[in-house]
Image (cartoon, rainbow, N blue to C red; front, side, top):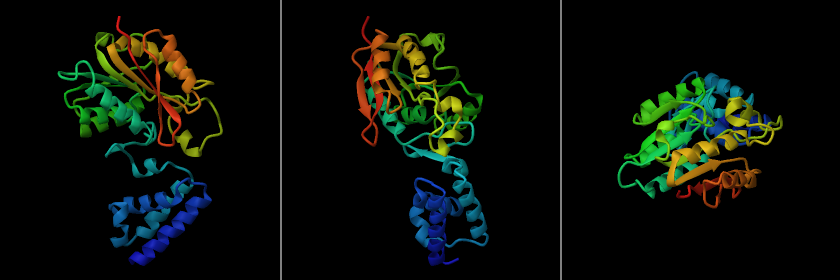
Length: 287
């Protein structure tokens, strides 16, 4: 197949994906082609597809048109400069969560123990996106990745082994009052991207491909957040920082939970890439 024919094939795939309601049909069509060819998307113009490409490409386009997540098809999700292994059973990290990971890194570098060996805890680690970002940026840190789901932990273990072997994986529930008791009052940063979507049948099809327990959290989306705030308050040292990602409609509710715990100073709001209130952060008060 010549490059001109490849462009035509990708353009047809884009039309197919657009007709299926895929949000980014052009991008996805190119990424699927690049995945099969083993090249970067920008290299497609120079690529010479081998025999059998059309059949293989059509099969992947059909899967995407059926609204199977792109990341499940390729087996990876990009996050903060690395490719994480993902698939059915683990939450696919979203680009906005990179902002929370960046906040955690900045906070850890400013932490009271930053000159020695700071400690970070990633609650609900999933594929390990936040924990791995922290471990790469702050090699002196001890990073704990907490994940309840055994299925998700298989991806977490794979990513940690490949990308950040120093991370300590902890099977556990982010709302467990006994979680990591040995770290009480010693943690510098707690970052959490918990399940936070209110129960609803009206979201994009791809959302329902993620594990239900990693996405939804009760009628108002707040169950996990209510449970994790007291756990974080117990773990953090005075001045330690908490960062929580939340639904774009629940910022005030999350702030109220953090404020109501009595353990933190005034909560602050961070916006996502679209300018929506998406994160609440706060520092633990001194005793």
